Image (cartoon, rainbow, N blue to C red; front, top):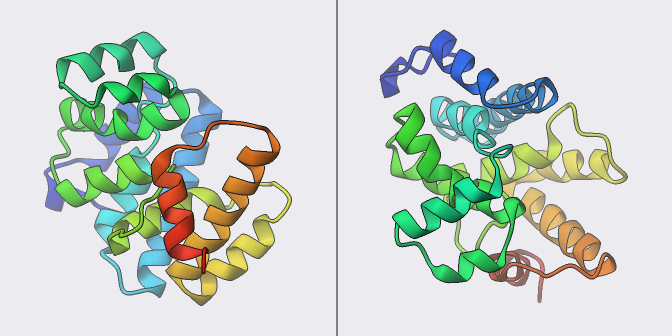
Length: 192
C-alpha cells in the first residue's frame, strides 16, 4: 500500500510507528491496516484512507498518561476527558499526536482514529471500517472473534453492532465506566 497521496512514504512511516510502540503493538497495527484494507475493498470504501487509519490508529497507545493530560490542556479539549484513561485517550487525544507527529491532516482519518474505541451514533464509512477492523484483525484471539468476523462480512453496520454489544457486555460485567459515545454507538446500532 502506498500513502503518497497523503504525502507520506510508507517505509518512513513504518519506522516512526515501530519506534513508538512495542513489537506486539506494531504487529497489531499491521494487522489492522490489512483488515481495514480488506473491509474497504469489500464495502467500497477508500482503500488508502482505510489502510492509513488502520496503520496509525494506535500510534499513541503506549504513551504515558502525562502526555495525554498535557495535550488535553494544550489543545483546550473537553476537561471531562480527564475522567477517562488510555483506552479513550489514545484515540480521542491520540489523533492530535498523529496529526502533529506524523503529519496526517485528513479530517476523516483523524476522526476515525478518535472514534476507533468508542464509535458514535453517526459514523463515516471510514470510521466504521477502523472501528470494526481494529476488533477483527487476524491477530485477535478472544471468545467471539470468529462471530465478529462473520458479522463484519455481512455489513459494516452488522460489524459495528456486534462489537458495540460485546464491548458493553464486557464493560458491564467488569463493572467499568462506559464512555458516553460507546453508549451512543450501542443505542444507534444495537438498541431497538
